[in-house]
Image (cartoon, rainbow, N blue to C red; front, side, top):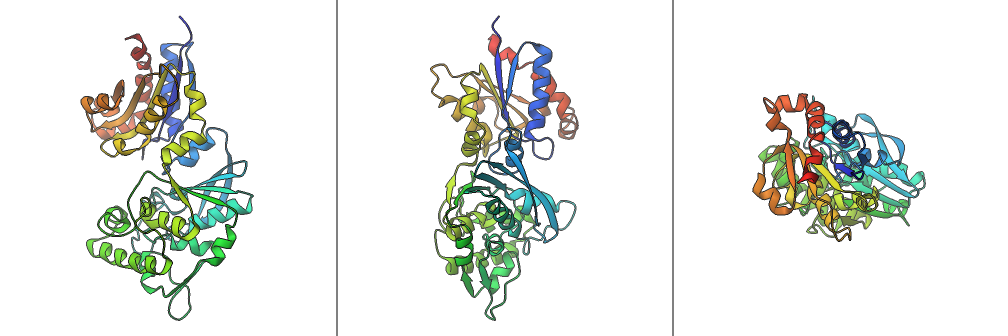
Length: 374
């Protein structure tokens, strides 16, 4: 039998394992089933948590940065660098996960750390900065990010406003020129698969602030503050993606002239997915939960789309591994997945599936080649 090549392209299982860890467990099971199998690993992400880890696993260089966290406390994060391209993951500097175990600060959490990471990347020579805007703790319209890059966001007395969405209530004047000078000649790309506008019922505050600890009254207050902010900054508040990252997308688009690209499609390009899939007999992707959001362009659909569009006359089958499959066999088969394995179906409870995830993934790995035997 010819040596078979399996391409592993999973996202993280949020709160459980990173993409590289998921891939390692699957690879161990594959090799137990067939010691001669050729395994290629391309961990991927959709612009949110795990984006930098996916790139570092593919040989990108880490740039360590020290920034303010979402609550102002210092954090150490990594930026992924290759040549003159740098990728900043907002979740590692202004992420909600950085506040777990403590208060969430829905009104005062800010994006200053993202701006500090962008500045560090530019100072290190980056001419193209990609910002993955998922997983933030803030709803500040990118004001903190712009302030860190030199923008003057001032109250009626000419003093800098406090960080956070509530601080936008005090903004009287905005001068973006220093931030724009800082990034003169630098291309800025917003990596997101969220298409929400900045304002209103589908905006950053209404849709995402409750996940960050905001009460109904807080949501109204934050949306009003974002309206004030948008009125001063101008630009595309209704543009798809402006509401991503608590409005961080808006700050990058309107404030810095950035452009939006699908996070998963961009990451697949940056990790060289097309080259790897050319020789694959089977593609394995996955994420923690398959649900309706997955079908709107998250990692699994991105990998499936990229595999089918890679130009091969006989694209390889694509299968998925997840913690929970909330879609069901009919839906997953309908979009083109050859098979789905859900870890929770092999465990005594969801908690057990998380605790034993590496073991369960290894067991799934031993079964992956069965798809090719059909």
